[in-house]
Image (cartoon, rainbow, N blue to C red; front, side):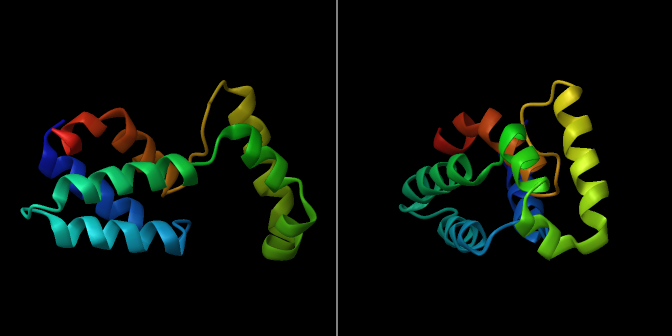
Length: 115
């Protein structure tokens, strides 16, 4: 993967409805730092935030079955919980939402950002 492709994944991650506000803010700081002397530091902060925010499948399952998920998703919570259970049963290690999928790709290629 090249850096430009990785930058597009970073943008896609931030655009996902499931991306938290803190990560969106760190993404913007990184994008603003591209090509400057602060780029490497911003990349390190981005990677640290992704590592903190990416949701492992066990946490996803716990959340999907929680009262909070019921409050957020209403009747759809049952489908969400079933999906989380199926994801875990398939052997997945992380959530498959629009933010976590590119986040994992970014982490797997972080040396490109830090190089």
